[in-house]
Image (cartoon, rainbow, N blue to C red; front, side, top):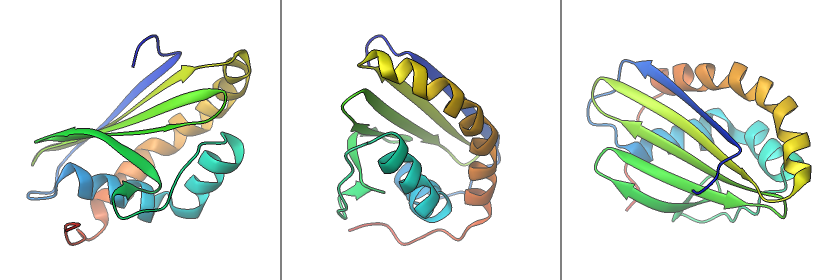
Length: 136
């Protein structure tokens, strides 16, 4: 992403051996964030999310490597990327937002306070959750 207006990174020391970045992302965004996440993403941020087995909580899988996955979604006023990096010892969640319209710079900063408060808890809850079967 070029020229992000917002970036953050949260890391939890303590991985789950054998859990892939996609499994982490599915637990984080589908199971833990669940309907509350969907309300924020779709309702408040207007992200265009599409339910599909090839997507994570409606977010497009934009790219991936052996130990990371990048999800992407956009609305009429911002573009978001979520990056989950995971190995046997750590898991990290990074959020990148590009403000595509001036409204985004007014909406996201107040929302980011809640985001920064909740993100560490998402990682802790995902750590404690059972690992789902890999998506075929």
